[in-house]
Structures are given as C-alpha cells and as structure tokens.
Image (cartoon, rainbow, N blue to C red; front, side, top):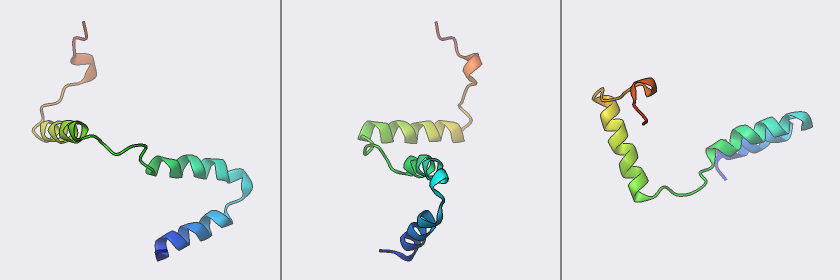
Length: 65
C-alpha cells in the first residue's frame, strides 16, 4: 500500500460518523464507473481541440429545433 493510500485510510478513520456520508459522496466521484469506449475518447479529444481553437458556442446560441 502506498504512503498516500495509508494516509487516506488514517484520515477516513479519524472522520466522525456524521461526516462519513459526505466523505463517501466526495470520494465516490473519483472512481470511474466504466472504462471509456474508444469513440468516447475520440469525441473528448475532438471536443478539446475545438475548444482550444475557440470553436465553441454558448448553449443559448444553438437552435435545438
């Protein structure tokens, strides 16, 4: 077990019972639900490239009809 993981275990053990739900809700966000699919990774890379080039639109500027 890494030193950082051991410190986290120690900190969790120090949290009062009433704070455990909050801590759980924060920590669970760092655990991926599924491995991303290749098309999801490609979509993310494309979106980030478009963002860096300034090719983004405000949601209110999009005609959703």
